[in-house]
Length: 246
Image (cartoon, rainbow, N blue to C red; front, top):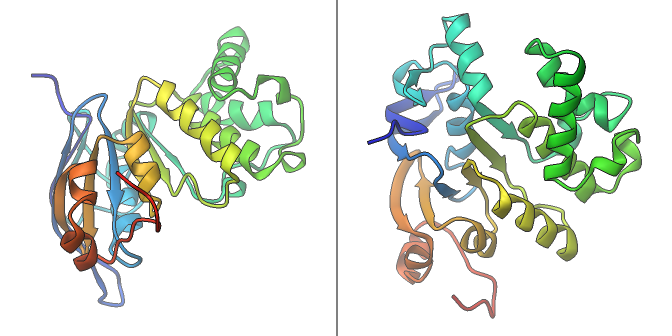
């Protein structure tokens, strides 16, 4: 069997103020899987994803990315893991800070050592994947919110990660931008972990879902099966939009 893209074993985490965010989380995601991470506010979802590339140190339990232990005390481990894990945050302006779109997308590969034609190719490929190549020389702040989110995805894809993590990718998007992003994400050959409150988006993009509530995984299964369980949704403060049919 191939090595899982992500494996988390007994991960627990408490903030310095004593707030316990995670209690023994166990997750395994195989290469190429598309998984939604669902749960109410305060469930620990953001805390969890920040462990995957070592932003939060792993004090209890273990996180493996493509078989490599995420070790916050080992710079070599962090470099390797962060080359395999790309996180797209909820606000694209957290990731876009260069004068042009092309320079933003080039920033990561450049810092990995790419130069010249190899760097240009990485930028072109990433922007092509998200349908934004024609905007390469435009300032990011001149783009619409949906376009900026697509560029933020490109900044991560340019690093050629094995795992793409998206934090609330559909938030603040108009219907057309939401559909366009879904089409882009469905076209990618990549392991996908999507944190979302948008249950229809989870159905559309992720065959499998995990529910995180109170710092523990309370359910793991086929997305449609989980979302048909009214009691499960109620227990975990999840709601489908009125009129939405699975």
